[in-house]
Image (cartoon, rainbow, N blue to C red; front, top):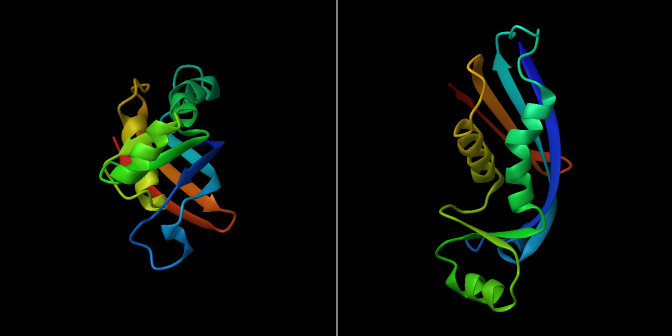
Length: 137
């Protein structure tokens, strides 16, 4: 059985390797669809939606109205720190694919119910573009 919940957040980033406009500082209204798979618990639920929010909400709060930046992008990090702007430093290029894996890793490290056997994340960078990945537990 599967359940899903959708979350949205605003976040900036850049892809310095990109040959097009995405090399520039810009932002998106991101959307993520998180799916949990598992057997039903004693209450007939895969996972309570309130518990889903408790797991995913802090990740959204960390990223919302933040600038996600790769750790080796020193000029941008210096600038963000100088202007005291919210930012999240990561060890990867800030592609939709890597952001998707970022969520999966963080969620899998949470205290999930024992009946959860899999997680799937679908990160929409725009209305019609997304990256999707899953993790079996």
